[in-house]
Length: 253
Image (cartoon, rainbow, N blue to C red; front, side, top):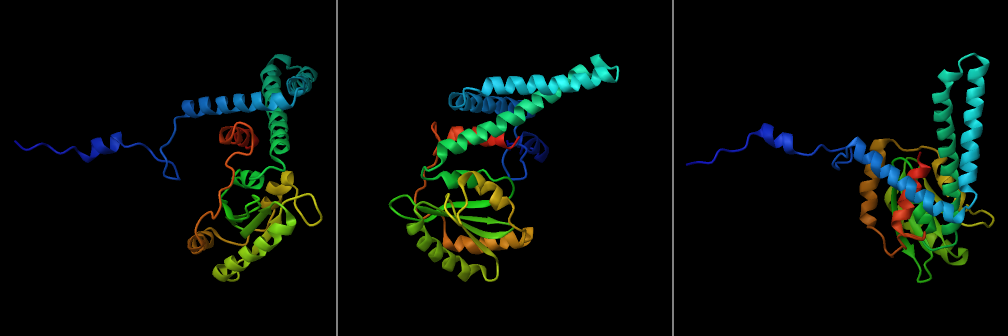
């Protein structure tokens, strides 16, 4: 007796839904729970290095909530404005928390190998980061970022060692990308360098020179150069990669 084949309808019903990147979609409640756990973890780690954090968040919540409620009293709608006061107070506290968590994270990673790579991997938007495309045994490194501005080469480490690495990598990339703009950035606090806390903003402010189609074409060309040539520390923060993801989630809110 021949077995009946499963109908295409039943197959489609059991197939998981995919997001734009082709990954299985996560339910809203599960995503909310994950985000809550990440924020809790980020708060715990930040509070260890920022003892004033609880008081600052409390003062922010109370101050903003009080201002909103005062407006409600002045226009004769105090009860209506209570939920708004709570909502705006929480929002203000979350913004302040995100900024202090970001500042705490930068203070912890600054000067450590892989710090620039960690910042670049947290960029918001379509940025294609390849960490450690060139480097030295002293853990100086050059990272390649592909985005709408073009190709961005970011070097971290001793300026005397990485400048030569940066120039060599720029020549290699230039052979493949033609007239596409190539930006080079040296991370540091010296003249002509970009401080680590300002690296993300500096990259995001670069002019948009490429369309989405040109970006994809360029990405295929650069794949000829291959991936990382050297290992880059995966998590410069205490607690490793898991903590870095948590604090990026807070920063993006």
